[in-house]
Length: 466
Ligand SMILES: NC(=O)C1=CN([C@@H]2O[C@H](COP(=O)(O)OP(=O)(O)OC[C@H]3O[C@@H](n4cnc5c(N)ncnc54)[C@H](OP(=O)(O)O)[C@@H]3O)[C@@H](O)[C@H]2O)[C@@H](O)CC1
Ligand SMILES: Nc1ncnc2c1ncn2[C@@H]1O[C@H](COP(=O)(O)OP(=O)(O)O)[C@@H](O)[C@H]1O
Ligand SMILES: [K+]
Image (cartoon, rainbow, N blue to C red):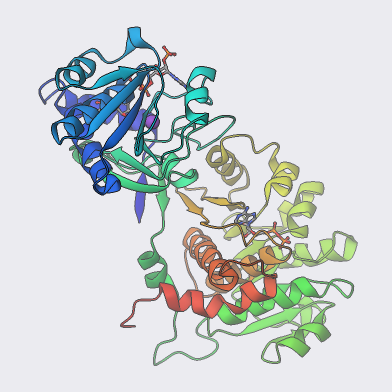
């Protein structure tokens, strides 16, 4: 798992490290790391431009310029606020022949030292003007200027780097926004950092957690997933969610609802019944996709919540919980619940998402004592115990009708297998993203193709030896 620390925590840790190292040492270490990566990106080319802002981020850029000059690179710098440019960095840069210019032209690489951890809001007009006219790849120092360091929010002009070089530890922006390739330089911060604020699952974490049958397993021991989804008019959601649960684990899947005919026709291995009461025992329920929001659907949701097994409530189930808060009473709050809203569903449940998606997911997790998976290009998953996972897609091919139904089926199967609900949601989200990428391979796909790529996505995350 990769940890990410908020700016407040990073700044506090930096202060403690700074108190015991010579003045400027931390910045020079950071800047040396920037220069090393810049030389790699330059691959023999020799002209670098710096965009230098008013703080230490600009100081890093100037010191990186100093190290690059000493390696024979031609370096010019635009000072966005000359009076506030980092004095020691600027003096060192000038000492080795660095040039201060009005505009960057004819460079092979731009180093973005406009603003770092103290950034607020998008780029200001003067900085935005310089950035708009760049025609070389950009290396951002610490983070892309104009992007919020803690929320990843982009609300106007910002830098789009090919690579970001950050220091000490990763910050939320590195998982929540496009930073290009992210490189981490050790500046001795780790001993000063306690547990991270956010976590990102790595492929190996997902592979290690994904349930696979052992020699003593049978169809029941791996968990039976119940699917309460779809309707006679909308059988598709039921077919997709059931399929996802079937492909996620080797456990059994029971479908209960009005789309039984359609589900049976597509998935003969699913045990299909017309109603929840006839469904038999399950270890988890997925409820909501394509279910509708009428009285019948409410009764289904209430029954599912009353069973006392982990539930993944998606789509129409979320709308019903928002419209009729009495439904919450059906649930024993100790029984795990995973809610999977997209932004509009979230709004119905808990108000506006806003710029800070992590805070929004945490708010709802607290309010409902549930794991809340807030969907989107960046999916944020918050647990009521305070843990937060983030999962950023590398493409947007999953933004297609029905792909959420696949996600809820995956989560349901992992819940039935007994995974910790946060991990179940995180692993499912990761495999979902991967399945979308594998299926799309550069062209649009329907959700059925995403579903069909689930086995390949699971193969891709599992350890080769297992
Ligand atoms: N601490 C350490 O030990 C180490 C820190 N390190 C480095 O320091 C960086 C943090 O430096 P920092 O705190 O000096 O502030 P920084 O991000 O450069 O901002 C400066 C000023 O920019 C302005 N500004 C704000 N928003 C803006 C916007 N949207 N668009 C344009 N301008 C904007 C605002 O000034 P204003 O113009 O409002 O006076 C703000 O005060 C950190 O990211 C890392 O690179 C490394 O060397 C490792 C050791
Ligand atoms: N821009 C995007 N990039 C990547 N994934 C996305 C994007 N937008 C949505 N998704 C993902 O696609 C799925 C859409 O789910 P949802 O909105 O419930 O659709 P549906 O109800 O049609 O199934 C979610 O897993 C979500 O995270
Ligand atoms: K920057």
